Amino acid sequence: MAKQTKHNNKKTHTFIDLFAGCGGLTLGLEQAGFKSIFFNEIEPVFASTYMANREIEDGHYFVGDINQLNENLDSYKHIWEDIDGGVDLVCGGPPCQGFSNANRQRVIDDPRNGLYKAYLKFLSAVRPKVFIMENVKGMAQRIDEIKDNFKEYLGKEYVFEARVLKAQEFGVPQNRERLIFIGNRLGVDPNTIFDAIYAYKREAFTLGDALRGLPHLEARKEKNSSDKEELATGLTERPFTYEKNDFYRFINGDRDITTLYNHKNRYNNERDIEIYRRLPQGANSLHESIQDIMPYKRRLGIFKDKYFKLDETQICKTITSHMKYDCNMYIHPWEARGLSPREAARIQTFPDDYVILGAQNRWYAQVGNAVPVKLAEAIGKGILDTVKL
Image (cartoon, rainbow, N blue to C red; front, side):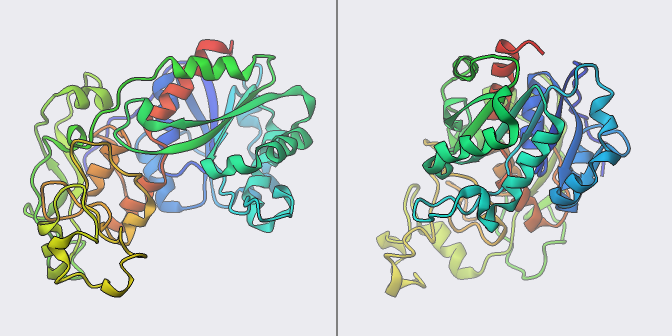
């Protein structure tokens, strides 16, 4: 694979990324003016993608469980303690599954939330100037309790607040809402930070904006052929001349990118391809055009969105890691196939030279788990606009 452009930033605002995934949150913060000095990710393939797209010093990462990292912090703490004033920012999105209102157990005590507790332990040990925690918006159901958890681990030194941010309000062509916690120990009112983030709102691009200009792909009809490289169904890497439209500039800036990565279709059976072809944009499994071949007729109420054809004039539905199983809910608006991993990455506002490593289904998983880059950039800019680091 060709050597990639590294998304480096020479500014000295430092941060640590936990639960880093393939680096969507990291890249947005880098574009805002931060520099990653350490990251943690449990999935080796995700970590490989992270490192392939930026310069990381040897030993400035931990690939494994964050609980193991917390047990071995003495081996890494020199990385941030050698920085004058300490690390500026710690960010991360720990999975937090046990936050239902129906669950009377404290969030912090629920064994399903062990990674959330580990995140708090890391914060209490490292004590950055600012922290970000991102999570699903449903976590807001227990917001007061979660604030108590932060106080329990961090004491009264930190002030913090949370907001549900909509990625589509920051240009991202996707309906994606995330709960964002921001705290600091510098006495800055977190509400002023969120006000500064909101200043970067802009009109969302449409799905058509994100897809237009990429080459046509045919559905892959041969099973167990994901490693096959052919122009018709897609290639891992190929030379390509992009149309430099407004969306291209939004995700790439003025850089001249001449290679197309991860634009490769997956296998589909003949029935699914025919369903993809027949459905009009914006239609789901209930549409009359496919009832004679719809395989879930007896449970249409449950499976109404088993198939969904995206509408090019609208923003995309939320990109998720479910795409690693199939793309039936992400049917391309004008081609009889699902979205390619590159198309999903564009919808997540990754630049076109951000390469996703691993097997093809893992490309989808990495992109689906990521924070939209341009949302992360707005968060980073809002912090730098209001907090003196």
